[in-house]
Amino acid sequence: MELRFAKVFDLPSIVQLINEAFSVEAAFKVGDRIDIEEVKELFDKGYFLVLEENGILQANVYLELRVERAYLGLLSIRQDRQGSGFGARLMAAAEKLARESDCRFIDLRIVNLRRELSLFYEKLGYRVVGEEQLDAEIQAKFTQSAHFINMSKDLVHN
Image (tube, rainbow, N blue to C red):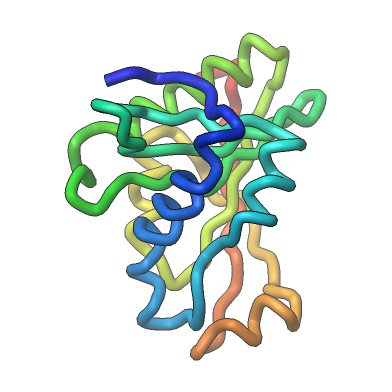
């Protein structure tokens, strides 16, 4: 299993992996989670860390370094590999990169309808720091009312 930074040629596989991993949201959200243009835009602003095995991406996470704070998102693990520790491994790698880049905090946000995610991130030391309403464009893609939960981890004192 190789942990590495994504390359441009990985972007279509990243789109496929994210959409597969987030397919559980079909119960309350219409359409794919992300498209190639969104992934290209993120790739230009930050980093995708990927776990690859035998030439196939198994998991990825997005990290954007923002002075003292890093933003993390799109943690995605192939459905048949979930529960294998890949998520924790990617989170540790992203946190290490953020620390090495002098970030003091790492932030993320999850949709409140994915309760299992807050439990996962809390086990890794993240704490709820607030809530954020979805803008109208995003809310229109949901079949029920939702909001974001903002979480953060202190990288200096953890």
